[in-house]
Length: 210
Image (cartoon, rainbow, N blue to C red; front, side, top):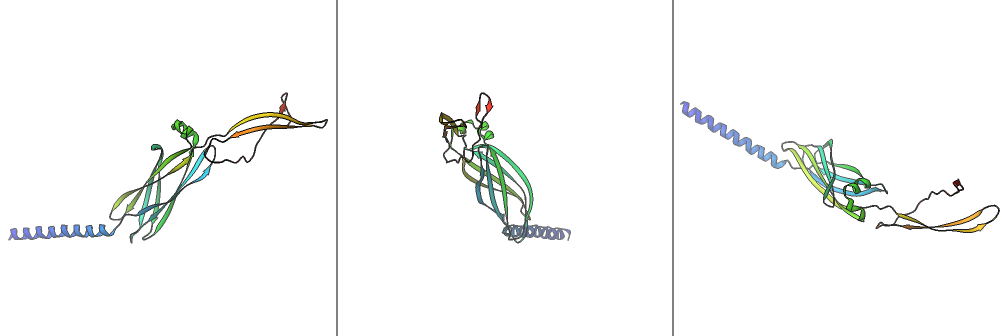
């Protein structure tokens, strides 16, 4: 009798474990990973000192239950070499069948770029690759990290060269003098630049004239 009861208990326990495994498997099949897409990666600002980048990502939750973006990490490579990385804790809730957009602005100083990669001083462009890893808390599935990446090109700014030409006296009388100074500007960049304003001082024997 004891042997029969033991066999029954073993069978019931085996069926329970098997049923739990089947149910757990069915639930996992219905819960899907969030989808992450790059919407855009663009240069939002450019100067002689720095370049501003803006990365836009879209997250879609295909499940009937909400998920949470816990954090994301990023790694920026220039010409295949690591340059800057970091991470941010977000805590963003994405509702069931919902979407959420996130942005990462990033400013790169040319002084830092050229200090790290001296060979880029002579280049007009540099290839970049931005790698993201988005970490989600998904019910049933647990913690999930989804990698995405985007590649593009960055302009490598060079300071324009200015050289002075001849200083010519055009007009001279008792009230004043008209002088003309020739300037030559050389733009070493692969794109055009606009000279928006110019500041100057004119001195004679250390005395400010203009």
